[in-house]
Length: 339
Ligand code: ASN
Ligand code: ZN
Ligand code: CA
Image 1: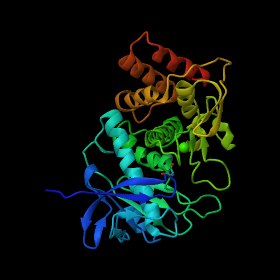
Image 2: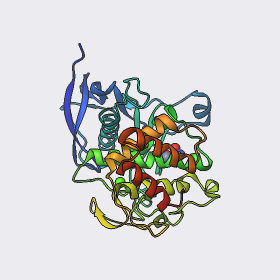
Image 3: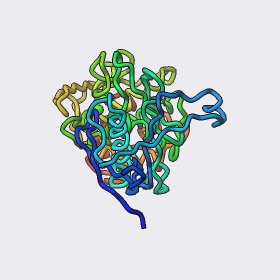
């Protein structure tokens, strides 16, 4: 039988969190037996060579964490296990969100957990999913701190879900929809986590950023200085992290409605592009609609116009053709100029 152990950890951004670990020499190791043995390891500030990235040759092997008493980290990044607590909790919470909300059994829907590695490189200001595993940099502490917040973890692992489902091509309009899907589910995972230290909001990366309030804003994407709030032709020529803005704005409006309110302690203020007023249906329903659209109707080449149709079809399936939910989806797309 598999012996399991329940510990806890002092995270960087989410306060004290439960940690599922496995007994090992010297105490316990960060392997999660509850979620398909996903594990978290230390990249020891090494980076992947081009040979490693292209051919998987000569890749550095991350070191496993061990802890004698199953109380991990101390809430400070000077303890190397602290970022690992956030990453391990992020992987577990993302796994639980997809399983309990959508009936999806892991990123690949095969019941398996995935590896995460922390402390990648030096002053590395990014986090990424490479098709198999999660990688987190420590940031430079000028632009950003360690990139292990719950919304970033959920964002990156959702790239794996997108690849395994619609597989939206990472350029043009489909690329914007791919990026938006990660912002949408990263945000849903943050709401699912529901921790006082990092409650749900529609900002992306508010915990990690040091030189601005957040990386992106779903209520009004143009707050980042680059993303459009409203659709226009040619949007597919933008960087995918900007063309995502219109779909993020759609999800905000459909969930929370237009106008101003404080959510998770942060000011949100969402204008519509057509002067309409929207009443939201809540993000639980919008998350269900987007997941069904992604997994049932979207393909590699889905455009914004086709995403409108995909979500309308999903809303009809889930709530009925004459439902308030479907009408709100239609109104929210129109409110971001996707008609
Ligand atoms: N953090 C970036 C992102 O997820 C890196 C990448 O994978 N493109 O958008
Ligand atoms: Zn992304
Ligand atoms: Ca957030």
